[in-house]
Amino acid sequence: MAKAIYDVQVPNIGEVERALGDLHDKAPRAMKNAVNQTATRAKNMMVRQARLRYAVNSAGRRHLNALKIRNRATTQNPTAEIFISSRRNDLGDFQSNPAVPHMGTSWVLSPEFHTSRVLKKNPMAPLTGGQTDYGQASKGFLVKFDSGHVGMVQRILGRPATNPKPTRWRNKNGIVEKLYTMSSPSASAMHSTVWREEVEPDSEIILQERLQHEVSKILLQAGRKAK
Image (cartoon, rainbow, N blue to C red; front, side):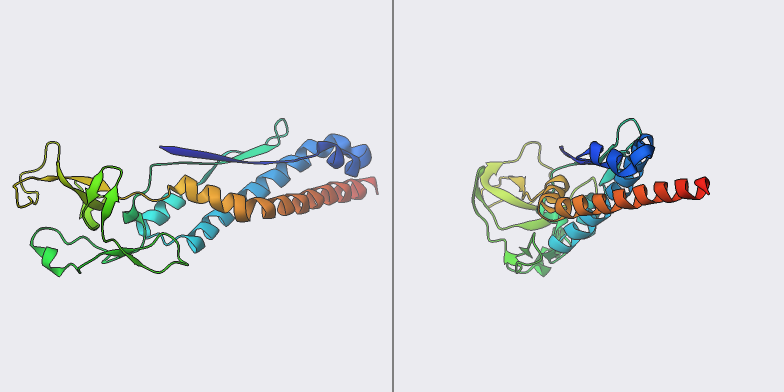
């Protein structure tokens, strides 16, 4: 299970207090509001940018949407945490052609090679098989597991499966071969890339804008009360 935490916090509390002058005791409120507003916008940006970058299918989009604001800022602790805990993705969570598994007798409908991609900027690539850490592997193909999950897998050629189902396909030697799930970036890894390359720099700008807005609002309210 992969986890990732992204912090949104005020880098310099003293600047906020100085901007408020005699109302410096209102700084915690200004920071709390600014941080929480920034965290909400940053979370939405991360999901949006990840969906623009990665060629996820409906299952992959659900994993990306698991991003949450776990801890919101308070006046005592002006830091918000954006958090995700996700299982390791497999290639079945990304665009593939065909998009549905051809199991049983429907295998005759399958093309010579399934194709897939992780990044939208890349073309669909044929899953031709080859050497893996587990041994020589077959070409990739989609399988629907008992859990309902659809995964992209390969058979490890000549390596027997553990406790195989009697209905599983057997090779010419009568062996039910071990399945290996083709891996891909987890949702937390995808969000980490988007945060580092795109969202974090923008979130710092947004935070400064929200701080200025909150400071101006406090000063304006104080001015109205003084009249």
